[in-house]
Amino acid sequence: MKHILITNDDGFDALGIKALVEALRPLAKITVVAPAINKSACGHSLTLDKPLRMISVDDDYYKMENGSPTDCVFVSLNNLFKEDFKPDLVISGINIGSNMGEDITYSGTAAAAMEAVLQNIPAIAISQVFTDNYKSLKTGFDFALAKETIVNLTKKIFDNDFPLGSRKFLNVNIPQVDPSNCKGIKITKVGHREYGNDTHRHVNPRGEEYYWIGLHPLLWKSSENKDCDFEAIKDHYVSISPCHLDLTSHKDIKTLDNWIKG
Image (cartoon, rainbow, N blue to C red):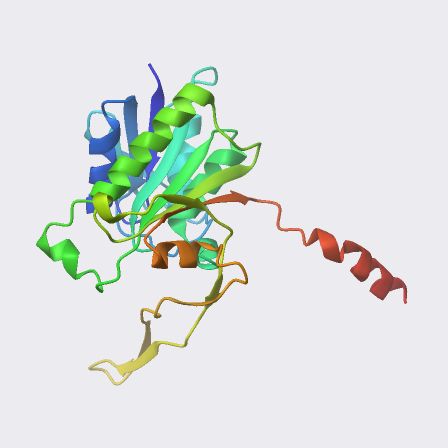
């Protein structure tokens, strides 16, 4: 039987991870290891300054105190699984909110997938885009399209192997539409996110200043061929972007070499 390790960055009891587990249980043995609290936008961070506790909350379901999504993957792969019996797939999500463009570099959801492929385990990061300021979460949003998409992707991987090479993962974003209104899947490049500066200054009762970073509107620089993740979501397609961990700007190696020698 196939085995899937599931994690996220919204916390072990988030609605998205519960939807993901429900969708995938018929396909494989499921192990869940997720942060004890919300760790959104923590990036690819390992916790080195405090101990980590993996606490069982149900059969094959753990929360990790003090842990990031990266910690969850790293610790569980090296402790819950034997050397000769690793999970067939790591899936991170379903994230509450998009992970497109340069937001991938902030994302704990994507970081968990990064850690998995560093450990030679195929991985998917899946995120649910919300265009209603998350209001639908309060009225029973069911993640139907996300669940349908991840089931179909997982079946395809189990039947045909993972489509990418080493140190590469799939980054999936789901539009906020019913499955019947989704136009299909688009394979996309990672878009160019445009950021604002939504930082709020406040003063606490003791007169001390503090700052709170707000939510930036979902803005992006249009791609020439309308082939980025943002454009696909805008047009009601599921976006799937192949991502790799090689951050080298290969086309600039010669230019930089000439600049150094010049």
